[in-house]
Length: 62
Image 1 (spheres, rainbow, N blue to C red):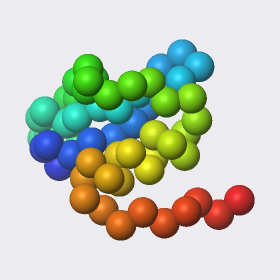
Image 2 (cartoon, rainbow, N blue to C red; image 1 turned 180 degrees about the horizontal axis):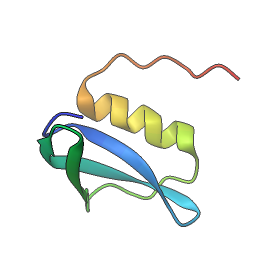
Image 3 (cartoon, rainbow, N blue to C red; image 1 turned 90 degrees about the vertical axis):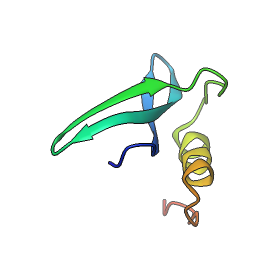
């Protein structure tokens, strides 16, 4: 993960968006993005992370 990139992680029953603030080899430090809502499902959080990072989103296969 690169510095400034966004990711999502489980937070209780929801998912929360995090931003990487430091990355050194295998060690990364991230902080929650406070102005982002909590997401109820993984796919919504994934879609938002792709949008924030400027990546092309592809629907997950089920």
